[in-house]
Length: 201
Ligand SMILES: NC(=O)c1ccc[n+]([C@@H]2O[C@H](COP(=O)([O-])OP(=O)(O)OC[C@H]3O[C@@H](n4cnc5c(N)ncnc54)[C@H](OP(=O)(O)O)[C@@H]3O)[C@@H](O)[C@H]2O)c1
Image (cartoon, rainbow, N blue to C red):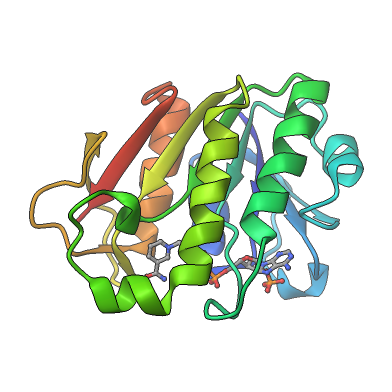
């Protein structure tokens, strides 16, 4: 498949790129700083662009099979509309270019009853933006999947549990490697179409 990755320079995004290449896919990494991508592979293209610019996204995503977004603000405490703005731009670009499959990374904190009020307060700006992104994605008419993991780790594990519409029981962390595995599995296996999916270790 030909995969278009937004947020490819991030910790989860790098896992997506590496695992997608290892699975034999072609990958376009759409990034603001191409020099951040040091990986070389004949199936990897790096395109410089702004993740909130619909026209740049449209130009770059022609003829791809799916879009994956692992975007996130580098400063999570500051007010930002990055996820909202990128979801709007990417959704419109996908509608125009005919790319239908979208898998985005969100957060388990949006499930009701996730009991971490302090984290929710500290991250309230990011959570607001992330929820706005989810609303845009759910209304875009595309074949979307929203992945909601708990706290992400650098653990060396590809294993995850997933549950549509709810967080897996007693799942408090997940490795970024496993997030990437879930997002790629969802695309390859055409699973979780138009679903919010809780994922955890
Ligand atoms: N951390 C957790 O425990 C946790 C838990 C649940 C969910 N999540 C979700 O997972 C997401 C990804 O996490 P992560 O740790 O992989 O993120 P990360 O390592 O911080 O990577 C963020 C990515 O977003 C890009 N980005 C940031 N600001 C940008 C901007 N203004 N324009 C274009 N690109 C921009 C970064 O590009 P540059 O390299 O150019 O900066 C990078 O590729 C988070 O945003 C959060 O919503 C995180």
